[in-house]
Length: 221
Image 1 (spheres, rainbow, N blue to C red):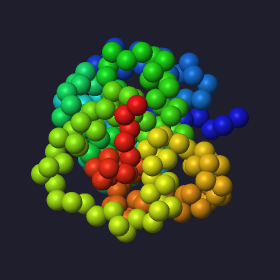
Image 2 (cartoon, rainbow, N blue to C red):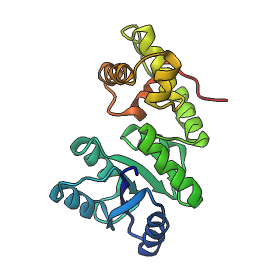
Image 3 (tube, rainbow, N blue to C red):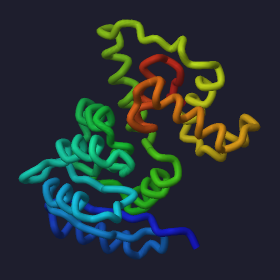
């Protein structure tokens, strides 16, 4: 049996948080290890516990320390932890901002339980997950701001790295990329790490943003 995905829930609405906790605890492969009502409680927990979660499901509007600021701190201090933003805000600028500061997925609070569980499993498997709507917003936001950017350089990426980057953008796993390109998973991981270093991306989500900015990948259907 696979190890359970360890989750922390952060939301100041107790009833909503308990509802999600109850929903997730029913899943065999998911374990809720901690609940917090604001970002400060969350950071305190992370600093004083050696066992870290795999994923944090983070509300954005909270007292004391909100989810946006907490996400910035976690990206710097605990970069391995993946953050799923869960919020009632669905404005384009807000979504784009959360992705740029490091959220690996973005869900609106009226999402279905099925979508939430699917997102958790995809994030655990692939490192990030954006539904069609969010991918469209990323593209529109980046395209609209492209004129103000100086030409970004992509010449330092090898053809193989560009190929792998495109497949990452289409949400392929390391194993799927390896099979498609007839490479070992270890070789794909090596290329992926090189891409992170070369593009100065903090995570896979950053690679997606980079690829769209540089017109390496087009994610519309």
